[in-house]
Image 1: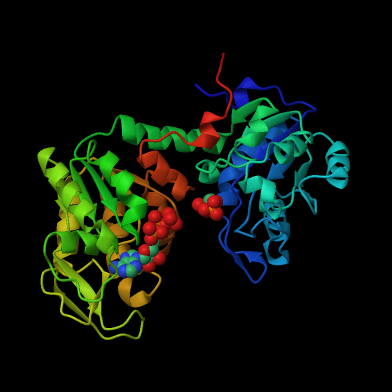
Image 2: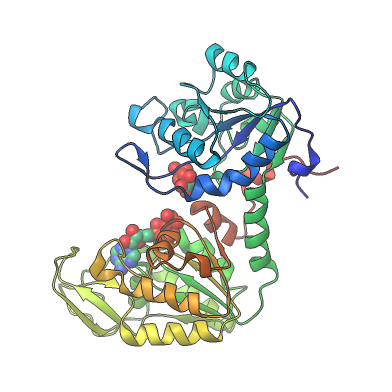
Amino acid sequence: MKKTLKDMDFKGKKVLVRVDFNVPLKDGVVGDKTRIKAALPTIEYLIKEEAKVLLISHLGRPGGEPKDDLRMDPVAKALANLLNKEVKKADDCIGEEVKKAADNLENGEVLVLENSRFHAGEKANDPEFAKELASLADLYVNDAFGAAHRAHATTVGVTEYLPAAAGFLMQRELNALGEVMENPESPFVAIMGGAKVSDKIDVIKNLINKVDKLIVAGGIANTFLLAKGYEVGDSLVEADKVELAKELMAEAEEKGVEIVLPIDVVIADDFSNDANTQTVAADEIPAGWQVLDCGGPQSLENYKEIIKNAKTVIWNGPLGVFEMEKFAHGTVELAKALAESDAHSVIGGGDSAAAINQAGVADKMSHISTGGGASLMFFEGKELPGVAALDDVE
Ligand SMILES: Nc1ncnc2c1ncn2[C@@H]1O[C@H](COP(=O)(O)OP(=O)(O)OP(=O)(O)O)[C@@H](O)[C@H]1O
Ligand SMILES: O=C(O)[C@H](O)COP(=O)(O)O
């Protein structure tokens, strides 16, 4: 058991809180506040407990140096609006100026530090950088589930120097994902979509030991269709993963797990929303065409029937190129089917969460993770470095 907020006394203490405020920015304004809202319970608790709150996050991938369009100012502004309270902002996350700003905080005040990835030491998990950061505070709280799969200075390194506990969001994510992986009510169905087989192999391998049915859709389905001996035209495939797809299908069969592939698919003559399209059987994809949505009517009917009978469903990755309206149908319909079902539904962050929001059914899901890569690593059955590094309860 990891330490949580309830295991620490915060009054008058400077608390370095790692949050995942890696949010989309549009014209210098936060485009989606979901991740900021998700961290509010921890921040509000610390304010109430009269801590001095130092928030640290990465934003985008600036490559170890300052980039003005990736500063945390819009995030601090959005947070101030949500908290309805003044939020201070520092122009760096280490150094004398920042130390002074941290020391000048009154109990219950909040200071947002600058993007941690403006320093190369963050991704390198450099001990010197971690030590500098840690020197700002008395205690450390990690509420950044979305970044817990990264062994960086703000997620792992600092825990060498400060007492370290999990925040409320971190706890909520670990409980929700842990429950579904350890005690799923069956029938247990996983839906894997998205673009890259290589990203999902370890997840599929682990899930084959846990689920009753595994729906393979999105771009990754093409490699499995190829492995079945179908032609897939110009579709996105990973030719070097065909053998592996065959092995995974054989392993699933041995274990009595059904791998469900699309029956019919929406194909296009170009990777474009203006392309010509048609719906064809998955074993009749003509040369020169590419699959951009696994949600043909028969496939969808099949997925809906499976979901209707499921007690637990986990979903990671869209069924098609849902960013283009013409190919969003399957993903949106699947989201709606999940919303209508009684199954316990857990969504693995990233694009799938965006699709659920697009379909307007977010409130119908049991749990939508704030982590993309982190939830995938969790579904792989691996321990997240940012969690492992936290203190155990004595
Ligand atoms: N048939 C397809 N052909 C090409 N790309 C596809 C296809 N189906 C889905 N995609 C693309 O897959 C991408 C999402 O893949 P990814 O593996 O990153 O999903 P994810 O795991 O949900 O995302 P994240 O890593 O953000 O959690 C989307 O951009 C989508 O357009
Ligand atoms: O958005 C995410 O998945 C996390 O914030 C991690 O971001 P990263 O992939 O840039 O490390």
